[in-house]
Image 1 (cartoon, rainbow over the protein chains, first blue to last red):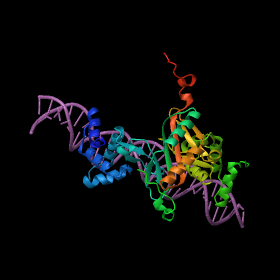
Image 2 (cartoon, rainbow over the protein chains, first blue to last red):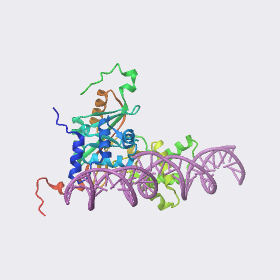
Image 3 (cartoon, protein in one colour):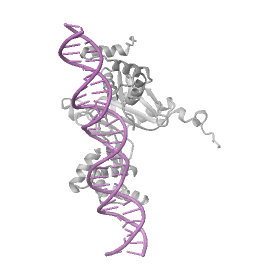
Image 4 (cartoon, rainbow over the protein chains, first blue to last red):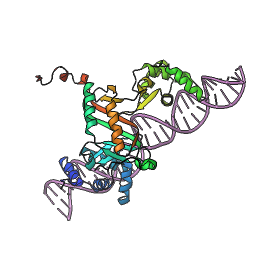
Amino acid sequence: MNSKRDPIEVLQHHIDRRGLKLTRQRRLIAEVFFESGGHLAADDVWDRVRRTDPNVSLATVYRTMKLLTECGLAAPHRFEGTSVRYEPAAEAEEHHDHLICVKCGRIVEFVNESIEALQHRVARENGFVVTHHRMELYGECAVCRPHSVAAQGVATST
Amino acid sequence: MNSKRDPIEVLQHHIDRRGLKLTRQRRLIAEVFFESGGHLAADDVWDRVRRTDPNVSLATVYRTMKLLTECGLAAPHRFEGTSVRYEPAAEAEEHHDHLICVKCGRIVEFVNESIEALQHRVARENGFVVTHHRMELYGECAVCRPHSVAAQGVATST
DNA sequence: TATGAATTTGAGAATCGTTCTCATTCTCTC
DNA sequence: GAGAGAATGAGAACGATTCTCAAATTCATA
């Protein structure tokens, strides 16, 4: 029921409009990226790409990730102490923030309208008009605290 | 409401306890840093330090900023697209978040208990126990939007 | 399908911010 | 004021990312 266009098509479109070219490498990198779970660093993408084509260079991965970012298919995030990680468009489409487990590195996304509203209010009170923001909550996830799993009702929000 | 101890004293104390040494460079760097408005990058501190002692090396500035961070006298922040900037302890003592003007770079600090509470709640709902977080709101400050200060809806004919 | 102009590529050099190495110099204790 | 240990300055090294450039590829056109 969703009109979620194939990312490769979107990329193709973007490329056509700019007079660029859809190369074998670009297609491969995009495919690998969208098949993955997301939140990969350029290096991670590179590793996976090379399983199929060992000749692709890291520079090309970087260049392609920038391309994907430009057409809204990927969103770069720089979390604490790590290099930039890219999120696939499907997830990046609507704004959300992140919960990051400091133990296992798991990243959970969440949306909270109340916080958004308060942020805009705080900004306004200080004379700011917010264009965007960054909110990351770091802590331990349920898996990394097996002792305390039973007690709390872990919300399974979908 | 405690007497805000002289940062140099705090540093001295930390240094004594660890068997380190309070050198001329460390004192100078600390002094320069605490006299400044804050949110300086290592490079900025270096520039100011060299006005007094042109021989101090950038490496020593980095080493000293790390020291100051360890004794809680400085808090490092990496904002969007910039290198790490340090905040003096006075400001870092109690938790706060930041508003950053994307035009002029001005940084405003704010505290909002409601947001904090919501953050913890969201985390809990996802099975996380938050240890710390990062929240930065980017936008335009009042100064950088002079047009909109006076009145809204007034057509500006030029 | 062949041609050619323009784009893209791979490889490695370059860059930026930061940390490390190491020989020399300083601090602080006795 | 001597000596042990720590800190310094200079520059090399570093990791992530971008740039450079000759060679290869794409794609529109013939």
